[in-house]
Image (cartoon, rainbow, N blue to C red; front, side, top):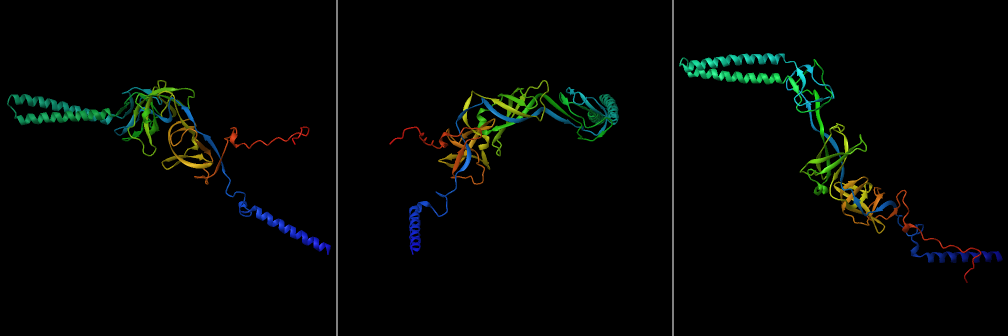
Length: 381
C-alpha cells in the first residue's frame, strides 16, 4: 500500500513538471524540434574593403606585334623557276630580284614585237616622205602611222610580260622560308615566299572606351615581351581607330616601335604601358570579384550583413586588379570569393571571412571571458 502511494505521488510530480516546462518555452521557443531562431546560417565569404589606391602613371594593356610591311610574293604569270636569288631568312633590298622564271617564250614574243615595231617605223617614215611629195594619199600615211602606234603598244606589252618573269622585292626587308625550288612550275598566284619589314615593327592593342580621353597620336608607350624579360622597348602611338567596338566597348590602337636589331618578331604577345599624365588614384577591386552577365558588369557587396548585387563600370586594369569608375565608393565591402555559388543573391545573409593569410577582423572576435580568481586571491563579499 505504501509503495503504491509513493508511485502515484511521483507520477503526479513528473506530469506537473512537464507542463510547467512547456508553458515556460511558449511561442519564443519556435517549432518543436527546430533550431533556435530558425532560418539558414550566414554564408561564409571572403571580402575586401575598397579604398582609393594610386594608379600607374598610364594605361596598362596587352597586344600583338605585327610587321610594319608584310607581303607574300606571288607570280603574276605562270612559268618554271630557273633561278632563286636569295638565302632563306636573309635580308633583301627594295627592287632586288627574288625569283626568275623561264623567260624564253616571253623573250621571243618581245623580240617579235620589236621587229614589227621597227618595220612599222620604217613604213611610217617612208609614207610620210611620199605624202609630202604628193605621191601617196594622206589616208595611206594615216594607216602607216596607226600601225606604228599599234606595234609600239604591242612592244610595250611584250616588254612588261618579259619583266614579270623576274619577281623583285617591293620593299627592303627579311625573307622567310621559300615554298618552291628551282625547276618547279608555278601558276599565277602561288605563294613563293614571305617578305616582311621588321624595322620598325608595330603593335596592335585595345583599351576601354572610358580611357579615350587619355589617348592621342604620338603618345609614348613602353613594350615588354616574354622572350626578353627585363628589356623594355619604347615607341609611340601612330593611329587610333575612330570606331569603338560595340561588342567589347573598346577602341583599337596601333603603335610603332624601333627594332634595329630585329629582336622583335610579328605575332609575339606584348605587354604595354601607355604613358599619360601624373599619378592618379582610383578605386581598385581584385579581378576575381568582377562578374559579368551580357554587357552588364557587377559585383556583390555586403550591406548590413547581407549580399547586394551592384552594377559597376570599369576603367583601367593593373596587374591583378581593375579600376571601378562608377557604382562603388570608398569604404564599400566587396565579396571576392564565394559570390559565384548558386545560392548567392540579393539579401542572402553572409559572413565575411579573412582571406588566406590575413588576420581575422577584430569585430569578429568574441568578447574575452572574465578570468576566474585564483584560489589564493581574496573573494569579495
